[in-house]
Image 1: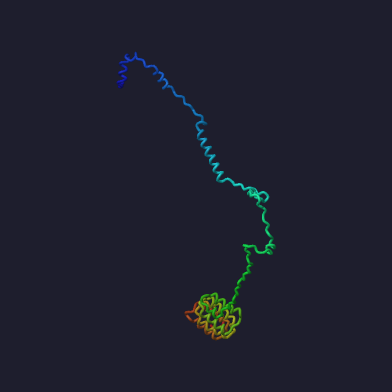
Image 2: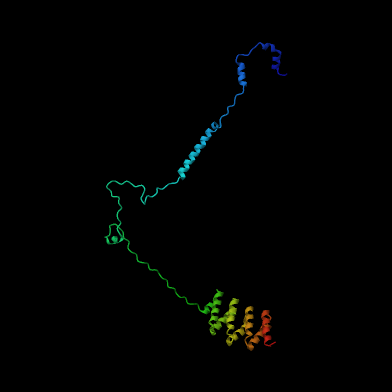
Length: 264
């Protein structure tokens, strides 16, 4: 033992045996050492306050919802009469005033302060006259460089008319030689080929064999020229076939026409 107090008590035990503790010390020690009983509270008592708070919150929420979103009931009509009537003082007649008939109102003199609108006259609807537009001349439409469809429509109109004069022939010849659209040139050739019996038309097509610069139109002229029985046509075909700058299909077609005529 290293504790000096315990050593002292062991050596002097006889000196302490005659001493007795004061009265009541043992009881106090026993009371302190006795276990204190645990008192369990009932769940109703433990959670009673919380339950009351929850119930109060629910009650407040229901009341607020009723005030905010409660349905407003309208009073049901009672045979067309208003349910609530205002009290009128005695002596005042509450019967509605009789409304005079339309005929009586018309025959009765004008009431002061009453406004009677005057009958308005029916408004006149402005009618616009359509001005008839005269068609443009064929020469203007054939010279319209902004629209190839306009030039094609003009050539189609010439074909449907069926007639041919010097003015139409000149316009078609100009379209055949100088128009910038191949389809317009072929359309002019088609109209001229319908009048191939005309000597001037045949001469025009013969001259176009050499002067034409569009190979597709030149090939079409060669096929049409095969129907022209003229020595000038054969000379133009020979010149076309021997020209080294001639498009090869055009050259072959020219040789084929000459071969059918036994000129080779």
